[in-house]
Image (tube, rainbow, N blue to C red; front, side):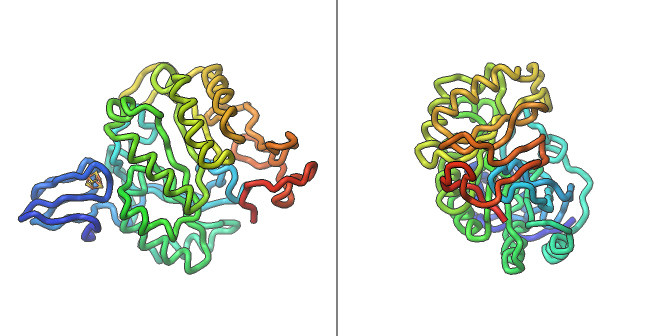
Length: 328
Ligand code: SF4
């Protein structure tokens, strides 16, 4: 096991108080935090997942999902284990809430692999929650940036302000889960608080490229009033923030039926009142191409995770409007 002393905690005698994320765990000797990856050993808090990699792939950037950040490119994607939320519908529970097999991959080795992967634009910290992999992500992201790689976080946004501020200068893009726009859903289904995620999104939007994902669970977080409130909030920051409405399938502790495509399409219709780019995830065959918000010209054509046609510059070829998409 790789042990590294954790950042962002205080000591109170033998007890440790972790403030990496808003769970603010108070951890007695021999105990672990809610995330399961920070342990108090004799009065010192250690991270248990430093450099422990459970999954390594070269993925299309569209799979993160990021649709407006280097569309059509590839990104080395790594994950570890643990999570600081407890969503009963977790779609990645085998690494979020169990300890999978891992390999040791120190930052320099991961960066070497990323640099030698063809057509790769950088490193995505994904699969499980990267904010509780903090020390490794920070160490890696810092060097990766020096070497010209981009860093991407695919995150639940449940991180405290100070660690987020420290990490953001090395982060180029984030896909942040906003699991619902009701505090009750967060506390009941995810064991977290919406306000903390809202704060993360608002700070991230000021610092890097941001896309949002909401896994729509029919009957739980598809209330039209809540969705519209979320749309107004996101659109108020920037109408060009891409929103991915992803289809829920039964997983982990939740066995409600999969969300119907009709519910997803209705949610998309609502959100389009506030946002220029709303996509449907986890549904083969839907149109997820990108259109110019001014004239409707197709800018990027996608077939699932594959880009089949890409705009040539950051201007619409028909009306000449500037397009808010980061290209190579
Ligand atoms: S990172 Fe883990 S130990 Fe620290 S506050 Fe969050 S859940 Fe608790």
